[in-house]
Image 1 (cartoon, one colour):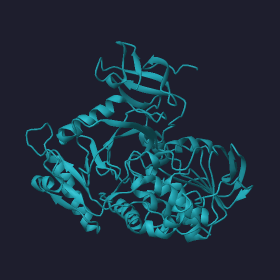
Image 2: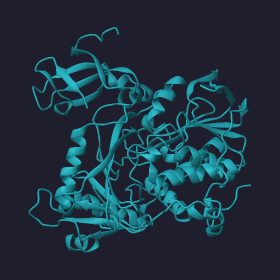
Image 3: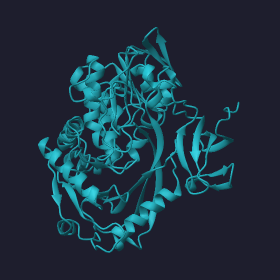
Image 4: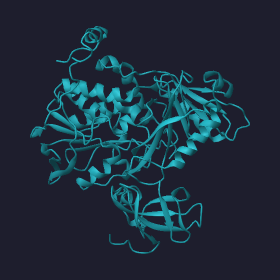
Length: 417
Length: 91
């Protein structure tokens, strides 16, 4: 049983110089066999394990991670959470996640620092205005809070934006989702890991999957760097490396893996208390609690697994940031990094069974998976436990690329690809 | 970030080029004869290899010609550049 985190435990541990905190999760060696194994110890994978144990009583399970937990895209994104997607299927999926976010810190007894500071999406041309207004109406019909703001309202909501009509791409308005916001991305992985571990889930780090063993059309287990692990159910949540794992099972996925970059500035006093995104000029920015500006750039046009990305992409983003926020012109950028995002042709994820019995994939989140972490884990756990999708992720099956029933969210995805 | 040696213009920065994705995916001669699975395979499914993969690139801000590149996606190192219509090299 884990000690509960509270103000009292904080005070108590202060007396022993914070040297006697209980470890948050064990570091076990893999058992010979599990009821299910999750491949990938990011937020989505750990959430999947957590809900498998919590809601479906599957506790003899493991999460295998080739590096350290939360070291991939979970720790590399710009932490934005929102659910203002256009289509009904996406609205259901992302708002399911947002509703879980709202109670997540309490549920996990782990402060994920979820902050509903609002997300504003800017329009810079007539087509943007039409698309964003349409999206606002669609959101409201789906019960998702969304409002359209005229240019002066944008300025009022976020005064540091340059709303002059003389700039290259003037601000013609924007949408605002007030329930949207940010969360501390590392804490999400750690909170789910701690919660899953408490229920008996083995979280095995530094354990890379090298092969998937099949018996006919069913999975038998995983070859890993820590030996063979027998299991009848494998849930793959490997983000940028999903195609690599799929290839081990002889499957092909409709994915392309590309570097997506982000950067942070030196920390400054509070200057922007919301999240502002712009698809058209490709710039989005928020401020962390530490005071750093968190800036998201775009994807490179080519497939790469290098977690780097090109300099010209960063340059374009910063040009747009400077035009929209002249006040940032002397800010110094401290760090820049890349993550490998797996992009589907319709910019929607895959949470699905496959043609191989016992093999499940949760992938294709592309540039915007962080916001969906709790919902994705919940629905993927349901899919694995019942061998059937939940009604909220039924539309996100892999067969939609055969049937043609795509969920085209290029317009609502955070990054224009 | 890397340099690409355009077979027509010489070595230029990657930002001058646009990636056209996986190479050697032949458009079916009779699309109407394909079933849904075959059409999905042609249209959407990609190898997305971590390692050397064959790709099409276009020198969009230069000669605007297409050509093929064998590139290692794990380190962005270009192994071979060859023209459209040529067979992929054995590496």
